[in-house]
Amino acid sequence: MLVNIYQPHLGTLTCPSGWESHGLKCYKMSHQVSNFWNAKKYCHDQNAEVIMPKTLEENKIVKKLLYQVKFKSPDKWNGIWIGLTDYEYEGTWIWNDAIKLDSAYVVWNTDLDEPGGGSAENCVIIPKATTKWHDVNCSISKYYSAVCQLKATEMCPCRCDYRRKLEYWESKISQNQTIEDLKKELEPVIRQIQTQLKVNTTKLSSTIRKLTSAKDEQKSCHTIGFVGAVFISAIFGTVFFMDLVMFRQHINNIRKICGR
Image (cartoon, rainbow, N blue to C red):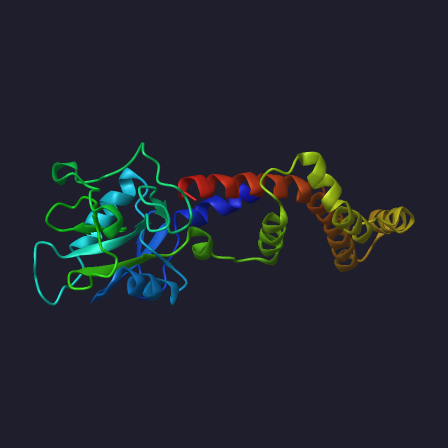
């Protein structure tokens, strides 16, 4: 149920003012040259990360954005930083989100034997000259600008209390938790819902009798509304747990799509 409600919003994600929407992420260009550390700070100040093109589609997006950056001094080697470094362990390239580079998808400029800078070049840029990856010194600031990306989880709009509660519980669930563990953890919550939705059978029977014998049509409608509300509440309680499990699976799918 929740997944059906949630999915339409994925295709209509909006970005903050000044950001561009591409796929499931938002991007923003600084138009100012800087070294890698300042580029990283620029993005972090906006709760974002330096762009991380982990897929073929995302690398295509980078190329589009590259030609939108307004450099003050035009040069074919003008380019943008990407969030990939090996300054902790030489030769081990790590994305800014702490994920190791997947060798199955890399766009190094092998024509120039990249990456070939050794310990002196621990950061990566994509220049207009080649639109491929080059390792460079992280402190160079003459040619390179920052492009930031917003994490997908920060883009998802929250439009109802029900979904907010499910998002809260999803954040409390560990990725390796079993259904049995989940049931045990949520037992107090489920019990509370059951208590809140407990039906007074005596009162319900009395209400039904009044309904069948009511002469006042307006009163009868109010009674029908009460019974309907009880029924809907019971249905809500029944599907709550199912929705939470489905929501967890859906969040995992989003993380896979976003490369997280």
